[in-house]
Amino acid sequence: MDKIVICGGNKLKGEVVISGSKNSALPILFASLLTDEPAVINNVPSLDDVSTTLLSLSFIGKKIIKRGNTVEVYSSDSRTYKHRAPYDLVSKMRASILIMGPLLARLKKVDVSLPGGCAIGARPIDIHLEAFKKMGAEFSIEGGCVKTHARDGLRGNTTINLRFPSVGATENVLLAAVLVEGKTTIVNAACEPEIEDLAIVLNKMGAKVTGAGTKNVVIEGVSELHGFEHEVIPDRIEAATYMVAAAITKGEIILKKVIPQHLKSINDKFKKSGLYIKESDRTIYVKWIKDLEPQNIKTGAYPEFPTDVQAQWMTLMCLINGKSSIKEDVFENRFLHVNELRRLGADISIDDKIVNIKGVKKFSGAPVIMSDLRAGAALILAGLAACGTTTVSRIYHLDRGYEMLEKKMKKLGADIKRICD
Ligand code: EPZ
Image (cartoon, rainbow, N blue to C red; front, side, top):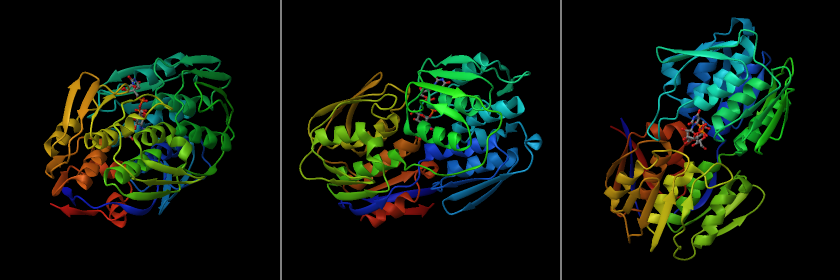
């Protein structure tokens, strides 16, 4: 199993180009199931989750051509589509659940394995199923598979109240309602930029979606959707990870091809802590100029502080003099990186959903294990700052969501390499 070995202590300096957003590319790729016409998606990051998605699309009946960061999707006749995705693909990636919307809308049925829980929590799909039930679908769970069908087709003229602004459930309803006759209203929708990017694609295809990016989204169904070309927005979580890298190594980094507005909650916290940040249209310049002040955070649905940056932020707070706290309000078990940070010397206590941190002077390098994608990023950041060598294993988590991470970090001056064990 590959490992990443880091010799800490180097200040990171230079430029990094932020890749396309994983969490925008995935739903947009699944949106190609809504048409038989060609789709061209640019700025798609080369990640394992993208590969898994392309395998699912091929299994269902699409012809995929990936050239660098551009994916072309072609199809034959949707009547030949399979109405399911195989367990081995769904079990690898929870976002596979997004085949439900398009296939229910087009084939009136879909079988999808219950996505496994993962390190950060049970991650049920009740909100998705409740929404489709409201739209007239019926489902049964057999052998770990959700068999869903809408005999007479999904029903429009419904209002879907989400009990939590679930990103995936909002996307799944969007991916179904665009082809359902009548008006569908989503109340308490997720507002993430990735939702807006998906809605832009759907409207390019001929859909009628309004309000994406707000709590209330209205979809007027149409009878047919067309092919599209689109450039995926930059990955705001990757961008935040490199901002932490600059702060934790007391360096200075220019982030290119980024949308500063998507990082407002994070930048506000960084500025309050004393990090120098200069934003322009598509770049963010970050420079460590003085010892930072600890800042408390509480994660929440966008535009609150993103849960996907919680682990990285925690690593930074561990090395800042003073006390800080983190409240994780989105997932029920997203503190698995705490024990690994403690191995490096962190002083952290957990009280249910709240973590209390006391800054320490330094981390000492040690072998650590990744539990999930963002915890993995946090351990890499910790290794960059630690004295000595940090060896990170189970780095397959990282390859799901960070494009060329070691290459980008090395270009910024990190002493980092991947070893095949
Ligand atoms: C998306 O996951 C992201 N993944 C996650 O990023 C991100 O952490 C999450 O949104 C929250 O922002 C992708 O976009 C591919 P949710 P998703 O449905 O859609 C509970 C990463 O690191 N819930 O908004 O699965 C759920 O358990 C990944 O890139 C239900 O209870 O997240 C969680 O506690 C990790 N029932 C909360 O809601 C449901 O039916 C938020 O989940 C659905 C969700």
